[in-house]
Length: 256
Ligand SMILES: Nc1ncnc2c1ncn2[C@@H]1O[C@H](COP(=O)(O)OP(=O)(O)OP(=O)(O)O)[C@@H](O)[C@H]1O
Image 1 (cartoon, protein in one colour):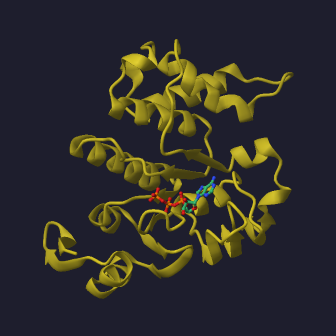
Image 2 (cartoon, protein in one colour):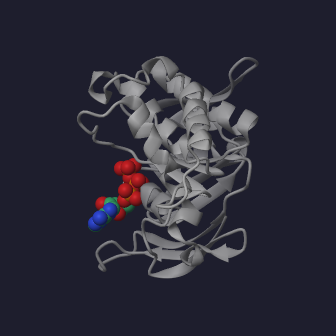
Protein backbone atom coordinates (compact mmCIF):
# COMPACT_ATOMS: atom_id res chain seq x y z
CA UNK A 1 0.00 0.00 0.00
CA UNK A 2 1.36 3.39 -1.02
CA UNK A 3 0.39 6.44 1.04
CA UNK A 4 1.23 9.70 -0.66
CA UNK A 5 1.20 13.17 0.88
CA UNK A 6 -1.96 12.71 2.95
CA UNK A 7 -3.61 15.72 4.55
CA UNK A 8 -6.60 15.22 6.84
CA UNK A 9 -8.42 17.85 8.87
CA UNK A 10 -11.27 16.69 11.08
CA UNK A 11 -12.49 20.23 11.76
CA UNK A 12 -10.96 22.46 9.06
CA UNK A 13 -9.03 24.44 11.68
CA UNK A 14 -5.79 22.44 11.56
CA UNK A 15 -4.36 19.43 9.80
CA UNK A 16 -4.54 16.29 11.92
CA UNK A 17 -2.48 14.47 9.29
CA UNK A 18 -0.06 16.86 7.71
CA UNK A 19 1.66 15.47 4.63
CA UNK A 20 2.02 11.80 5.53
CA UNK A 21 3.90 9.67 3.02
CA UNK A 22 4.79 6.03 3.66
CA UNK A 23 4.34 2.52 2.33
CA UNK A 24 2.96 -0.60 3.98
CA UNK A 25 5.03 -3.62 3.05
CA UNK A 26 3.14 -6.72 2.01
CA UNK A 27 3.59 -9.72 4.32
CA UNK A 28 5.10 -7.67 7.16
CA UNK A 29 3.94 -6.44 10.56
CA UNK A 30 3.90 -2.64 10.63
CA UNK A 31 3.19 -0.85 13.91
CA UNK A 32 2.25 2.80 14.20
CA UNK A 33 3.28 4.40 17.48
CA UNK A 34 3.31 7.93 18.87
CA UNK A 35 1.85 10.10 21.65
CA UNK A 36 -1.89 10.50 22.29
CA UNK A 37 -3.63 12.51 19.62
CA UNK A 38 -0.73 12.42 17.13
CA UNK A 39 -2.88 10.93 14.35
CA UNK A 40 -2.31 7.16 14.54
CA UNK A 41 -6.00 6.18 14.35
CA UNK A 42 -6.60 8.84 11.72
CA UNK A 43 -3.87 7.34 9.54
CA UNK A 44 -5.37 3.87 9.99
CA UNK A 45 -8.80 5.26 9.06
CA UNK A 46 -7.40 6.71 5.84
CA UNK A 47 -5.78 3.36 4.96
CA UNK A 48 -9.09 1.61 5.59
CA UNK A 49 -11.11 4.17 3.61
CA UNK A 50 -13.07 5.29 6.65
CA UNK A 51 -11.74 8.80 6.25
CA UNK A 52 -11.29 10.64 2.97
CA UNK A 53 -8.19 12.85 2.97
CA UNK A 54 -8.41 16.52 1.99
CA UNK A 55 -5.54 15.83 -0.37
CA UNK A 56 -3.12 13.05 -1.21
CA UNK A 57 -3.58 9.50 -2.43
CA UNK A 58 -3.59 5.98 -1.07
CA UNK A 59 -3.21 3.11 -3.48
CA UNK A 60 -3.19 -0.64 -3.13
CA UNK A 61 -1.67 -2.80 -5.85
CA UNK A 62 -1.31 0.36 -7.97
CA UNK A 63 -5.01 1.17 -7.78
CA UNK A 64 -6.25 4.23 -5.90
CA UNK A 65 -8.46 3.21 -2.95
CA UNK A 66 -11.25 5.45 -4.24
CA UNK A 67 -11.56 3.18 -7.27
CA UNK A 68 -12.25 0.01 -5.27
CA UNK A 69 -15.84 -1.17 -4.93
CA UNK A 70 -16.79 -1.73 -1.27
CA UNK A 71 -16.89 -5.51 -1.36
CA UNK A 72 -13.75 -5.69 -3.48
CA UNK A 73 -11.94 -3.53 -0.92
CA UNK A 74 -13.31 -5.57 2.00
CA UNK A 75 -11.66 -8.65 0.49
CA UNK A 76 -8.35 -6.78 0.54
CA UNK A 77 -8.47 -5.14 3.98
CA UNK A 78 -10.24 -5.72 7.29
CA UNK A 79 -10.08 -3.45 10.33
CA UNK A 80 -10.73 -3.98 14.02
CA UNK A 81 -11.46 -0.73 15.86
CA UNK A 82 -10.28 0.36 19.27
CA UNK A 83 -13.57 0.25 21.14
CA UNK A 84 -16.41 -1.94 20.07
CA UNK A 85 -19.84 -2.00 21.65
CA UNK A 86 -21.02 -5.52 22.17
CA UNK A 87 -24.35 -6.11 20.44
CA UNK A 88 -27.02 -7.70 22.61
CA UNK A 89 -28.40 -11.22 22.05
CA UNK A 90 -25.77 -12.25 19.55
CA UNK A 91 -23.66 -15.35 19.69
CA UNK A 92 -19.96 -15.48 18.90
CA UNK A 93 -20.62 -17.44 15.71
CA UNK A 94 -23.29 -14.99 14.50
CA UNK A 95 -21.01 -11.98 14.90
CA UNK A 96 -18.12 -13.77 13.20
CA UNK A 97 -20.44 -14.73 10.32
CA UNK A 98 -20.93 -11.01 9.54
CA UNK A 99 -17.34 -11.09 8.31
CA UNK A 100 -18.62 -13.12 5.33
CA UNK A 101 -20.87 -10.32 4.03
CA UNK A 102 -18.37 -9.04 1.43
CA UNK A 103 -18.27 -12.53 -0.09
CA UNK A 104 -22.03 -12.86 -0.53
CA UNK A 105 -24.63 -11.26 -2.75
CA UNK A 106 -28.41 -11.60 -2.80
CA UNK A 107 -28.03 -14.16 -5.55
CA UNK A 108 -24.79 -15.87 -4.70
CA UNK A 109 -23.77 -17.43 -1.43
CA UNK A 110 -21.37 -20.32 -0.96
CA UNK A 111 -22.42 -21.72 2.41
CA UNK A 112 -19.66 -24.31 2.42
CA UNK A 113 -16.98 -21.66 1.92
CA UNK A 114 -18.63 -19.44 4.56
CA UNK A 115 -18.66 -22.29 7.10
CA UNK A 116 -15.00 -23.07 6.36
CA UNK A 117 -13.95 -19.43 6.79
CA UNK A 118 -15.91 -19.07 10.04
CA UNK A 119 -14.41 -22.29 11.45
CA UNK A 120 -10.94 -21.12 10.47
CA UNK A 121 -11.47 -17.72 12.10
CA UNK A 122 -12.80 -19.31 15.30
CA UNK A 123 -9.93 -21.82 15.39
CA UNK A 124 -7.25 -19.14 14.89
CA UNK A 125 -8.66 -17.10 17.74
CA UNK A 126 -9.18 -20.11 19.98
CA UNK A 127 -12.94 -19.59 20.12
CA UNK A 128 -14.28 -22.86 18.68
CA UNK A 129 -15.53 -23.85 22.13
CA UNK A 130 -17.36 -20.52 22.51
CA UNK A 131 -19.16 -20.38 19.17
CA UNK A 132 -22.61 -20.71 20.73
CA UNK A 133 -21.89 -18.35 23.64
CA UNK A 134 -23.59 -14.96 23.94
CA UNK A 135 -21.15 -12.07 23.44
CA UNK A 136 -22.25 -10.54 26.72
CA UNK A 137 -20.99 -13.62 28.59
CA UNK A 138 -17.40 -13.21 27.35
CA UNK A 139 -14.40 -11.69 29.08
CA UNK A 140 -12.71 -8.58 27.64
CA UNK A 141 -9.95 -10.69 26.10
CA UNK A 142 -12.42 -13.08 24.51
CA UNK A 143 -14.48 -10.19 23.12
CA UNK A 144 -11.40 -8.69 21.53
CA UNK A 145 -10.69 -12.05 19.91
CA UNK A 146 -14.26 -12.25 18.56
CA UNK A 147 -13.82 -8.93 16.73
CA UNK A 148 -10.58 -10.22 15.31
CA UNK A 149 -12.31 -13.48 14.32
CA UNK A 150 -14.96 -11.47 12.46
CA UNK A 151 -12.21 -9.63 10.58
CA UNK A 152 -10.48 -12.96 9.83
CA UNK A 153 -13.70 -14.46 8.45
CA UNK A 154 -13.54 -11.64 5.93
CA UNK A 155 -10.41 -13.41 4.57
CA UNK A 156 -8.72 -10.20 3.56
CA UNK A 157 -5.01 -9.90 2.83
CA UNK A 158 -4.41 -6.95 5.17
CA UNK A 159 -5.54 -6.82 8.80
CA UNK A 160 -5.57 -3.43 10.56
CA UNK A 161 -5.82 -3.37 14.35
CA UNK A 162 -6.33 -0.15 16.29
CA UNK A 163 -4.86 -0.58 19.77
CA UNK A 164 -5.85 -4.25 20.00
CA UNK A 165 -4.32 -4.70 23.47
CA UNK A 166 -6.25 -1.90 25.20
CA UNK A 167 -8.20 -3.17 28.23
CA UNK A 168 -6.41 -6.52 28.17
CA UNK A 169 -4.34 -7.80 31.05
CA UNK A 170 -0.74 -8.75 30.35
CA UNK A 171 -1.60 -12.41 29.69
CA UNK A 172 -4.21 -11.55 27.05
CA UNK A 173 -1.98 -8.86 25.56
CA UNK A 174 0.72 -11.44 24.91
CA UNK A 175 -1.83 -13.98 23.67
CA UNK A 176 -3.19 -11.43 21.21
CA UNK A 177 0.20 -10.34 19.93
CA UNK A 178 1.24 -13.99 19.51
CA UNK A 179 -1.94 -14.50 17.46
CA UNK A 180 -1.00 -11.51 15.30
CA UNK A 181 2.44 -13.03 14.78
CA UNK A 182 0.97 -16.41 13.83
CA UNK A 183 -1.48 -14.80 11.40
CA UNK A 184 1.43 -13.03 9.80
CA UNK A 185 3.95 -15.87 9.72
CA UNK A 186 1.71 -18.85 9.07
CA UNK A 187 -1.18 -17.33 7.14
CA UNK A 188 0.68 -14.60 5.30
CA UNK A 189 -1.48 -11.71 6.48
CA UNK A 190 -0.08 -8.21 6.23
CA UNK A 191 -0.62 -6.54 9.60
CA UNK A 192 -0.89 -2.84 10.37
CA UNK A 193 -1.52 -2.06 14.01
CA UNK A 194 -1.47 0.82 16.44
CA UNK A 195 0.19 0.10 19.79
CA UNK A 196 1.08 2.21 22.81
CA UNK A 197 3.51 -0.21 24.42
CA UNK A 198 6.87 0.57 22.86
CA UNK A 199 8.48 -2.68 24.03
CA UNK A 200 5.69 -4.68 22.42
CA UNK A 201 6.13 -2.66 19.24
CA UNK A 202 9.87 -3.43 19.24
CA UNK A 203 9.24 -7.12 19.83
CA UNK A 204 6.43 -7.80 17.40
CA UNK A 205 7.07 -5.45 14.46
CA UNK A 206 9.07 -5.73 11.28
CA UNK A 207 8.58 -2.03 10.68
CA UNK A 208 7.68 0.83 13.02
CA UNK A 209 6.18 4.17 11.98
CA UNK A 210 6.70 6.78 14.71
CA UNK A 211 4.33 9.74 14.49
CA UNK A 212 4.08 13.07 16.25
CA UNK A 213 1.69 15.99 15.66
CA UNK A 214 0.20 14.59 12.45
CA UNK A 215 3.50 13.74 10.83
CA UNK A 216 5.85 10.79 10.57
CA UNK A 217 8.96 11.52 12.62
CA UNK A 218 10.88 8.42 11.56
CA UNK A 219 10.23 4.86 10.38
CA UNK A 220 12.13 1.67 9.81
CA UNK A 221 13.18 -1.51 11.63
CA UNK A 222 12.56 -1.23 15.41
CA UNK A 223 16.17 -0.86 16.54
CA UNK A 224 16.76 2.01 14.11
CA UNK A 225 13.59 3.87 15.04
CA UNK A 226 13.38 3.47 18.81
CA UNK A 227 16.31 5.25 20.40
CA UNK A 228 16.83 7.10 23.66
CA UNK A 229 17.05 10.43 21.83
CA UNK A 230 13.92 9.93 19.76
CA UNK A 231 11.82 8.84 22.76
CA UNK A 232 12.97 11.91 24.65
CA UNK A 233 12.16 14.16 21.68
CA UNK A 234 8.74 12.69 20.86
CA UNK A 235 7.39 11.59 24.25
CA UNK A 236 9.48 13.78 26.56
CA UNK A 237 10.47 10.70 28.57
CA UNK A 238 13.92 9.70 29.83
CA UNK A 239 14.72 6.05 29.21
CA UNK A 240 17.43 3.48 29.38
CA UNK A 241 17.86 0.88 26.69
CA UNK A 242 19.18 -2.59 27.23
CA UNK A 243 19.80 -5.65 25.17
CA UNK A 244 19.28 -9.14 26.51
CA UNK A 245 19.89 -12.48 24.78
CA UNK A 246 16.37 -13.66 25.56
CA UNK A 247 14.47 -10.36 25.35
CA UNK A 248 16.38 -8.62 22.57
CA UNK A 249 16.28 -4.83 22.69
CA UNK A 250 14.08 -3.31 25.38
CA UNK A 251 13.43 0.06 26.93
CA UNK A 252 12.81 1.08 30.53
CA UNK A 253 11.15 4.48 31.09
CA UNK A 254 12.89 6.40 33.89
CA UNK A 255 10.90 9.58 34.24
CA UNK A 256 9.73 12.79 32.65
N1 LIG B 1 -13.95 13.25 14.56
C1 LIG B 1 -13.06 14.13 14.98
N2 LIG B 1 -13.36 15.46 15.07
C2 LIG B 1 -12.45 16.37 15.48
N3 LIG B 1 -11.18 16.04 15.83
C3 LIG B 1 -10.84 14.76 15.77
C4 LIG B 1 -11.74 13.72 15.34
N4 LIG B 1 -11.10 12.53 15.39
C5 LIG B 1 -9.87 12.80 15.83
N5 LIG B 1 -9.71 14.11 16.05
C6 LIG B 1 -8.48 14.79 16.53
O1 LIG B 1 -7.43 14.43 15.64
C7 LIG B 1 -6.21 14.23 16.34
C8 LIG B 1 -5.67 12.85 16.02
O2 LIG B 1 -6.57 11.89 16.57
P1 LIG B 1 -6.26 10.33 16.49
O3 LIG B 1 -7.40 9.63 17.12
O4 LIG B 1 -5.90 9.98 15.11
O5 LIG B 1 -4.96 10.24 17.40
P2 LIG B 1 -4.25 8.95 18.02
O6 LIG B 1 -2.78 9.15 17.78
O7 LIG B 1 -4.85 7.71 17.50
O8 LIG B 1 -4.58 9.17 19.56
P3 LIG B 1 -4.71 8.14 20.81
O9 LIG B 1 -3.34 7.57 21.04
O10 LIG B 1 -5.11 9.04 21.93
O11 LIG B 1 -5.75 7.11 20.47
C9 LIG B 1 -6.53 14.46 17.82
O12 LIG B 1 -6.17 15.78 18.15
C10 LIG B 1 -8.03 14.29 17.90
O13 LIG B 1 -8.58 15.08 18.92
